Image (tube, rainbow, N blue to C red; front, top):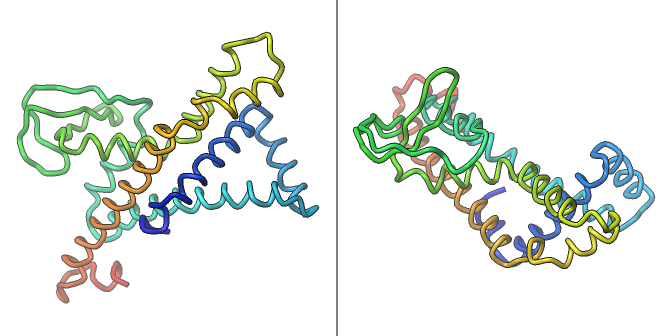
Amino acid sequence: MDSESISNLAFKELVRKYLMTLACKYVDDDVTFMKHLNKQALLGNEDAIHQLSIMKHFESILTNIQKHISDFALLGYQRIANVCLAIQAQPAIPFPTSHNWNVCALSGVNTNSVFVLAQDNASLYLDEHYLPFATMLWTVTHIATIECNRINNFMTSDTSLNIKQSMELYRKSEQMTGEALVSNYEIAFTAVLDVLKQTRLEIELNVCGDPTHPLRVEGCR
């Protein structure tokens, strides 16, 4: 799965359907919903089969993102992998910022415009140049939690409605189908895969292009 395969109108439609599937999943009991969906798929229910294929599609994208990150470590760039993992480990966005002088954990350059990542009992400082990527990486890898919180907030906004009525309103609402929301997710997925892919290519050129590099045999394809 690469960025070229998701940067199109078809992907936006997949995002819309994925968000609705996540909403259904979290309104119902997670385990119960998935059992029901798998059972219906086995019975030949086309809607259930389509929902499962969409979920697998996004699982594949997220797995690919994690593979890129783990490959950075395999190729000897543990620092990049650690930063990506630290970004994903943050409890929420936006990340706190600071204008004190610190060394950027990625570039190694002193800067007084950073955002801060908590890591164990220490902090990582990243130049604000990397903030858009960090925000998008956090967003795509927390999409399920984000959507769970959004549907929960929507469902509790009007307790006079039953679940079926609330879901129908949610399906038609701007919160669910808004172009800005879907575009933001598309941009985030595409940008994250682009950055990780390009970083991986540059690393491979550096590591695999050097026949004397100690990681060449282990990490190169």
